[in-house]
Amino acid sequence: MGKAKPLVVIVGRPNVGKSALFNRIIERRMAIVEDEPGITRDRLYAESTWRGRPFILVDTGGLESGDCDITRQVRLQVELAIEEADVILFVVDARQGLTPHDEEVARILRAANKPLILVANKVDSREIVSHAMEFYALGLGDPVFVSAEHGRNIGDLLDLVVDRFPDEPSEGETEDEGLKVAVVGRPNVGKSSLVNAILGEERVIVTDIPGTTRDAIDTHFTRNGRAYTLIDTAGMRRKSRIDDSVERYSVYRTLRAVERSTVCLFLLDATAGVVEQDQRIAGFVHESGKGIIIVVNKWDLIESKQDTMREFEEHIRRQLAFLNYAPIVFVSALTRKRLPQLMDMVDYVADQSCIRVSTGTLNRLLQDAIARVQPPSRRGVRLKAYYMVQTQVQPPTFLLFVNNPELLHFSYRRYLENCLRETYGFHGNPIIIKARARE
Image 1 (cartoon, rainbow, N blue to C red):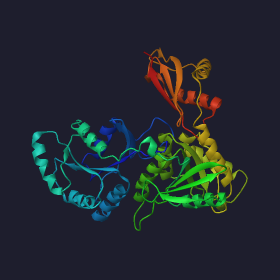
Image 2: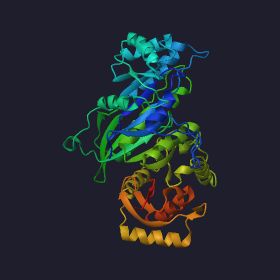
Image 3: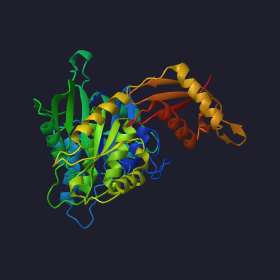
């Protein structure tokens, strides 16, 4: 746990095929509408694996010209990508050829000193290969000629991507830094204030070391004999005269911190409620399989009335329905109210992520669940669930052997998840149930 996956960022102007390349690499089409209720965020990122190396792929969207200054918009998106990326895929359109926009992006990338691969997309014929030779003039090395639409040379491209990843640390090189807790949330919700309040409350010896991402600081401390590492992502600085697209792309730093953590403190601003960027960040934490605690900060600014806290919690549950398993703690970083309870909850959620259930006990629960609610059927064929095993912890992951995995409807999967929670807890942690056909 705690080892960050490399971040691969796709950069380029509109209509060069970035989204097509994104979908081709992750081997599925990322739809706007999810089959799980409550997830309404934009989908800019996904996990993928090549040659046994998992990584996060990010699609930055097009470098729009519009009414705004072209150079400023180019710099905004490219600089944000440069700050966080381990590898940058600079996509150009081989059919259209070299453009001034391509040259502007290339100029910035040359000065970045980051691993970079120039991807000439839409190469569907030999004639286009000859035409695409003009991209050598960018001075970014040999272009990789691909067709995202037809899958041409995608494997060769991914080989180059993996070759540029940072070396994985060996077991002997990894240092035990205790329980890793990431403090995540959109700008100005009080992340740094919460970190400082936690450290001040505990009166511990603190050492600050640079984190694996720019503007992130790892702070090591102990509490009640347990070692922790707080990962502060508050370095999402807001640049002057930049619109809300900064918040959209500041999610890069959150991706990094979440990947390295065991438990995430997901901060909300009590004075603002749940906004779209909150949903996007919470969604990534949920999908990454990390433990999560929803922390409502600045509660001291809310006028206390009867049922105020209950009503706010109901608002959160409606807006973040996919985090119905996450505990909610109302705190004030300013007054340090409920911070001891928050840290107790961190310990509890971390311990819950490590629960392992024996196969015999698990299958007795499965049979009881089937007896109470019959599995679904489709076109006259009913799902048959034979047995279940737990394959890993952090996150709790279960493998269900069935007659046909396609018959496992989302609603029945959620029913089995609820049965597991009622019996074993797993509080604050997503439960993953995978279906496999029994041979």
